[in-house]
Length: 453
Image (cartoon, rainbow, N blue to C red):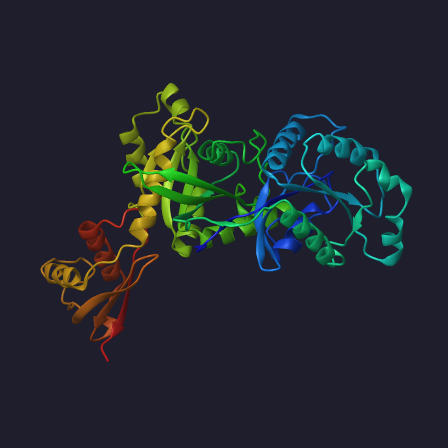
């Protein structure tokens, strides 16, 4: 989990498609957080990250490529997001392609950016060699009314240091600085197959159009981070980092390239999450792919919560009560009956407010520590309980005791005389009894064994 984040000066990277915005974003963050591809329109959502220069952080926003000369529903959604990014930004980096030179789309976008009244720095990217850098001195660049462009190569790093020096000088002149913020209480990844409402849920939780929502599957092409503050019933504020992931289809259906990279990145987010929210479609029910996703999540050991979305449609179709649906899920998920279930409609907002409360509860359960004296009392009770893992005539393993050896998830070590006598079913039996005694809602519990020394 991230330990601290900062409220920093905000810089938005804006430009038409395929000028290298995501390449620059990744260069500034020194990691591959955004997918980079020669296919225009690869980035469709805002992507946030932090860059450090001269020991000071800035927040960087990577935006979808903007072509204000085109029309279309998704293009309009991208424009709204770019507008939101510019609204959040203190400074805008306007990227153009040094190899192609200024084109009509750049000029239209440049005029649009100037209307924002935000400081704009013109950057000529893909200036990978002296010849291309020389081309940025041509008079056409001055027609933007932003002065001479700064030539850089986001791909190989040429000129990026100079760009950061200029950027930080502007930040200092504007009197902007970082302010500490509270620690993140939980990192929550929202997962599911395509088009079940993950992005709609994130937008609803964030209170703004943070990612593009579309009826077309695979609109989200890479994981997206959103920081929200949730207030519990006692008035305590909780800082939650929400991560929207791409819809994960069956492996055989995942196309190589952008979708494959996005799926790989999303799986990485599952491993880093404190809690995973699996969103399923109430009308379509739980399918095999979602069971596989749950199995993948359980391998990585985050807490898990199931959000049954489109519950309003299920009620219209009279598909049964919430109790009936829970019984159905319990039958389908016999391997993990401890996963909590929340019913909601991301589209209408019904019951969405309960999601973060449940997720925070699961995150706390994942951190739960049981005092040793309570474990010892638990073990005394356990000795009196019959377990079916032992066949007739077999002896119970000789158990000397048990201790909790970790959290996130809770881990327990059983100390025995001979490990060969410890049947896997016996460890599952102990896990089930631990849940009966101490709950551990929504979190995996690991029970291991070792021989006495």
